[in-house]
Image 1 (cartoon, rainbow, N blue to C red):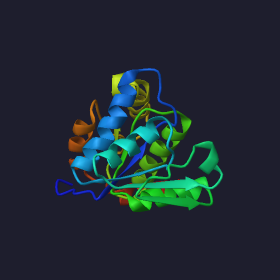
Image 2 (tube, rainbow, N blue to C red):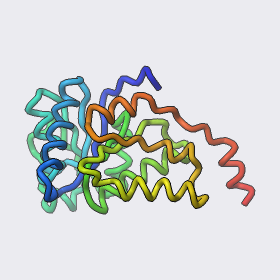
Image 3 (tube, helix red, strand yellow):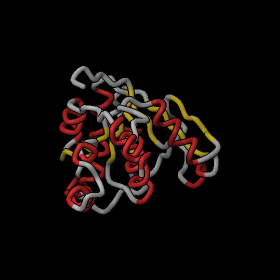
Length: 199
């Protein structure tokens, strides 16, 4: 996918800032980089934690930011009211589907269960052939090291095919993850789906 020219990238990350300054620095760098490249940010719509830093950095650098937030979280996550666009939706399922629909790729920064879940869901959708968009994570301070090891172990133990493991691109910096994502090759799954149906 070397002719990948994304209009928007969805960023998954924490609603907390984390303990290390590198997390906040990388979130700010990610937002700024996307703006500088003319790539819009799609994210969960909050103005707190790493989420808010990505959005603010992108906006301050002249970029476009679209937030998608469920009604129930507007108060809890504190909806960001200065975005280019803020869509308020009815549920978490609608939120994730809408974020995916708006985006040409997905990047995860450090976060907790919500970030893990969003990342795993878009990887699963890619494995099943529901989309062919690249998925990357920025492994700040080796935060995602155990997750990367788990993915490799899933291959070693026969729970994941090597080509599906390859759906997740990881890099240490925002710049490097975009380079890795540009080299993404979608996995063709017809044979795998046929095998599943025979089980």
